[in-house]
Image (cartoon, rainbow, N blue to C red):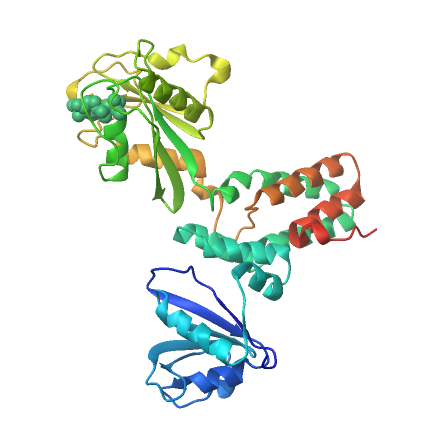
Length: 386
Ligand SMILES: Nc1nc2c(ncn2[C@@H]2O[C@H](COP(=O)(O)OP(=O)(O)O)[C@@H](O)[C@H]2O)c(=O)[nH]1
Ligand SMILES: [Mg+2]
């Protein structure tokens, strides 16, 4: 193998506008020089760190593909080429021809990241589905959560334990937002047959995902679709209408699945028909009552509803739906309570270490508390320091 040359595809494989291959190692500058011919004529070894260069990529006299190379560190180059498989494969093949090594994402992160938290943030960043999630995860990959851990550790070392507890409590309050950078909030639309659940979902999504029909029992399975509002992900679930007189066994299975989805929902949109005013949700035993927004649908058909019917919408005309989306976003994601740059725990293991750190702190186990805080950054390989 050529002296220390390795590369990895840093964007997801498959169709995309651009793809990025990162090339690293002592041999990286010589390798990039041999394949990349910048329009300005500058060779890779003379490129300035932080600058971007346009040119052609081709080896052994081939005319080459137009692309952009950025030098991000002395021995680190990013090759930004056309998306898809062909262009990045060409670059990776050239690395192999030059005696270099191609690493899969996990091996790449193991080798190049400062510590486990940085590797996790980078991996999560590559999977971010919205700009907001990407911005928050980028902040974590640049050290937001790591710096927060450092601050807590120094507070522990100076004995400011009340401040540590306050900081951990504040961080635990953000766990839900952090976890939902990668996972959608689960919103389940529930209610009796024919109240307009499927039409409501279609209106909220902006296209016809569910079949809408004026016969009870049309939606038999649970149908899930992921959408993004205000930069956060939501999984909308359409359910079979729950009715006690369902005799068809297939419909009954749908009803059981609906109940199951409701139990696991972060938020239920409980839909009732404004033309019949049946408050079916009053049958929900209070101990099993999920977090829910009660909606009166079909308000285009009726006027002067009692003021107790707070949430009046029409899936047909769109009345009240913009406010409904804003309410769902506020209720679940509380987007105003975090700003980009804030530390956010984004994996279950971060939450576990935070909870344990808090327990140890309360029990005055400061060594173990420190250990748990360090584990957030370093993962399980960290030694307990006394
Ligand atoms: N006028 C009116 N009709 C609606 C509204 N929402 C749904 N519908 C109608 O009610 C019927 C049942 O709708 P659907 O979405 O299939 O109900 P689901 O069984 O609860 O999923 C269909 O004929 C819809 O067109 C609404 O807001 N206004
Ligand atoms: Mg339906």
